[in-house]
Length: 161
Image 1 (spheres, rainbow, N blue to C red):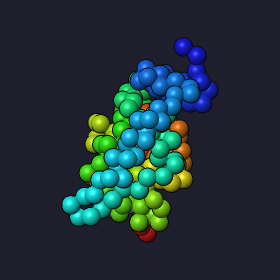
Image 2: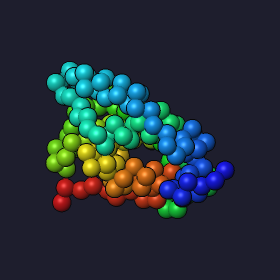
Image 3: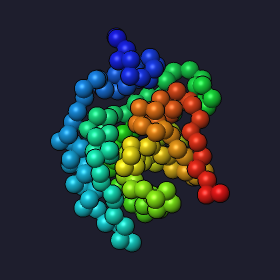
Image 4: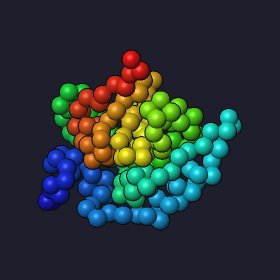
């Protein structure tokens, strides 16, 4: 199977095994997720932000359950990624709190199924992970974030110092 050259070989292979291919674009599903997120209001009155960078990420990668790259990982154990913004539907407050702290709009992206970390994307396309240990910066783009997570690179811990 040829490498798209957009991703490292192992990441490309994991994406293709999950059903991704260059040019994949399911805007109908992405718009349905956007509508569901916009309509959801938490019991505390929290709402989700929806913006083009999130919709584009959902259109290209939404619905994929991507296995971690085989092997020990570069710095950490590689993690699987599920791209499904509905996994963050009931986390509007958590996502909103992170966005306020970073002074940017953030929307749900999916999760790391092994750890339960919530994945989110901001209006610039940067990707974050939120888990029981804190908030993490996974990459400046979804491509970099997928590479970081799937190959076991170390995400950067966000601090308020």
